[in-house]
View (cartoon, rainbow, N blue to C red):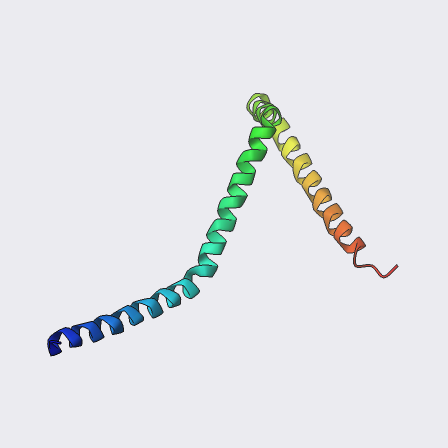
Amino acid sequence: MNPRLLELREERGLLRARCARQRRELAAQYTPVLRQVCTLADRVKAGRDWVRRHSLLVSGAAALFVLARPARLRSIWRLARWGQSLWRGWRGLSGLRDKLPF
């Protein structure tokens, strides 16, 4: 066989091996980033689905904010923040219930 052809085949094999190694390195390097991006996309999709399922609630809240006076908006906002704090507290305490020894 032609020595130049053998040399080219050997070089091609080395290049293919190097490409495969680089693909593995890229996959290992970008897997965590892609996982985070996919997780964020799943959360956005879940939020969109929630809004679609509760469209009446979202529309009512939007109408309330548009129609309410600014002073009432502040009190509604304060009430919503208070409710969120209570909800987070309840969720935190319910998570502790499984960890208690009694």
